[in-house]
Length: 438
Image (cartoon, rainbow, N blue to C red):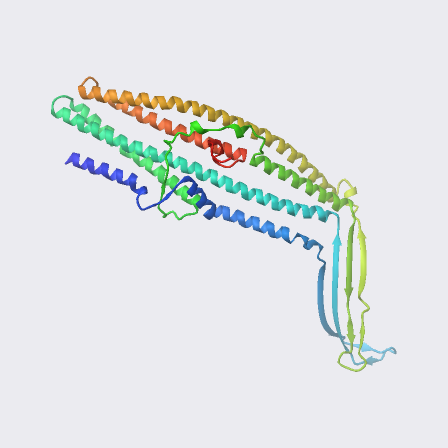
């Protein structure tokens, strides 16, 4: 009965691991990226921000539209007198007014350039949001493949421990193994279940994060397609890393510098150049509209041109002068940030290339380690069955084999993840460094 119960446990574990491949939606890494770009909520908000900046750019010419106002009304004075000072009956008056005014300063042209720059900045922000999302989706996807392989290794380890327990039990019954070996095999098998549960919990948590990236309900069943067993190190092409493309951070810093320069230009032109204000108003008034002798008059209407110049910027302690100083400080800071960002970008690329080359060499070594561990384990199994090695030696070689397999997969994920980081830094399509897109 105990053996039958253990068989049922293994069958259940196998069913849990195989469940994602059943009736679930199967997604490749490219499918996951496509779904994320279509449904990710954060990316949608970034798209809305870009639309708003586009609308602001389209309506930027509105600064040249004059300010207009219209009004109308009737009035009657409480008392009225004639030319001799005698009281007369007050009369009604109907009036309308219209005014048009426009103020123009050379700084408006710098402001228009700023609106256009804001739109360019929005475009860059949206592009980088898409690339960041794609990088994150791919890294989480490949990490899930690693965790899925880890689950498979854990399941295989459970199966091996079960077989070891069965063989040891048989030997014990035949007098070929001590009871302590049976107890040791039982403990080794029991210890694997909590470990498997931990691996499964981590996998499901990260799978939930992937669903968030994809904009899918957490209840949506999805399965992963692909494997980290595919050798990627043989197709790596690091030639694009020698190019002169600017990283996203450098592009962002350069746009910020341009924005600060336009801000300084606008502040300077607003301070050093006069402002021209043009206005026209008309106030037609109808006297005594309800009686005889009514008459129209427009005594309050006027056309005016006014040129004004602020002297505040000429004085060192005024707010206008301080704004100029702050704008100049912002440019110095932005130049420094741009220079530092370029250096950090170059360092990031250099470090990533070193890490990739080291990972490729490590993969070669770890592949040999897996082959050696497999041969050692096979020999241990044969020796244990012949009685020349004990159970602890067999379990040790088995653990070494599983660890070697996992180390190989983990190093392959590190390589793929670093390639994605470098492709993002180089601002090239993902897959370029794997000999794919050009």
